[in-house]
Image (cartoon, rainbow, N blue to C red; front, top):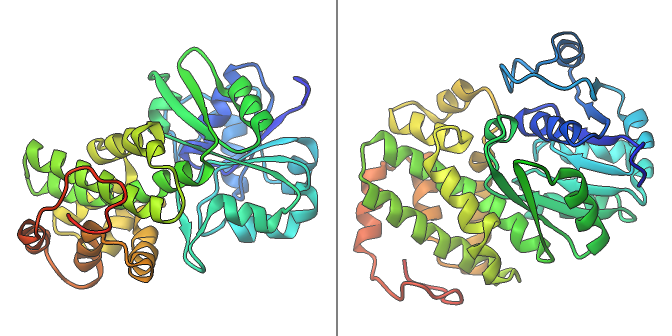
Length: 340
């Protein structure tokens, strides 16, 4: 990859826009592809993405485009920041253009059909591409505002990891590498579910002790699930696991936390999601995750509890009372399949 060649970012949401600007700050030309021509035009004329990252000036090196084939043809390194529900349908028609490219998913979600992670969808759509994932405690606005941030690029392709580190690593953004793509990606997808619960707890005025309990039990639960699927438990002690879980469960900037907060204030799920105006991946993930946990017989009381609140008419108080009556087992045991 020469320095002259542009880098593609697919998806004009908050994270795609923040990553595009970061790449531009590091001296790279960026093609930021989005479906909405009006949004692309406002980036060209205003140098801002008012819908998703209001107030953040985008550098001239970020070129907004709606021409996907031209974008893919021009770039070897492609960051995929599309919502999980759109990823397959957007890329499938252009599969031939993806062969041999480095595709790095930044999307923290799971496709319902067959419990597919985003990198697995990329492998299906583009079997000859080189695949990686980027995940960590990375709130888009803070990345855009240069808050000191670290992330993880994960792939068994070492050269891909080094290429991503080279282009993203900067003054305020640090990129670590991992070979546990599956674990890193699962961490990013699973934590969204627990952030909804943390937002609800905050809206209901539950204390710091409660939040701390929720976060640590969530970590135990998501690690137990991921290990059952073949991930390395140690991955969850890093940025993509506990790091991402903490920021998503404690920050009002987190979209999933915001949805939970709105639910805690008495809004319906539909009202909470529509108030947000963006995709909160945790809402999509919860149904898929509950079904998969039951199929694998992994004990996930928090997931079952949140599902009961969102889709079975239970209240958070009822669910917490139920959890508190559960028999406590070991505190930290990554391979235990029971014990809240």
